[in-house]
Length: 218
Image 1 (cartoon, rainbow, N blue to C red):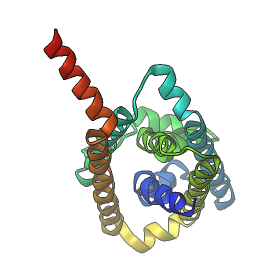
Image 2 (cartoon, rainbow, N blue to C red):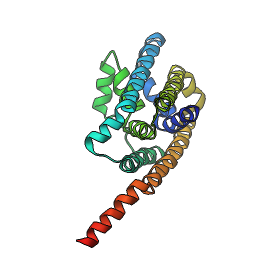
Image 3 (cartoon, rainbow, N blue to C red):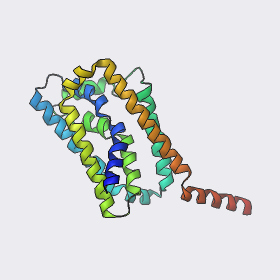
């Protein structure tokens, strides 16, 4: 259980990347006092925990309902995570949020769910990793270990967001960009490992051999 907790934090932390979310959080809470900003950070983290926990519990049911295999989830998740990591290493000219979405987020009193929790903290990449971790679990204590890892991650994210003003001032623009690239590299390594695990999975190899046998027989 302890090992799964560490793996969960290590796998999700580069994807959630609270260091790169901190500048976005500061931008969309511009004009808020510190108390309101802390409340928004807490709500956003609670939403993040709820979203990831939902996919942790229902991930296997979703896979069984749609007939998705574990190798398929690993390969798809690796590709998706790799895309996000590549954008962190080589950021596009525009950020994920469109100007209309930024204006809309500033108009809202509560920005904790969108765009903070979704898609900044618990986007497709972190959801894919959570489902993949869930497929590795066969006992309740393993699910508990992953859930504890999500809670530890939530504590790190909440602390980072609460200290976002000081952190951004300390790191500066160049420091924040450097931290984002380091996280992007680690996440890209995780993505490649997901793909390798999916391709070399015995279940996928067996399906491939079965398909070849059927083709030859036909």
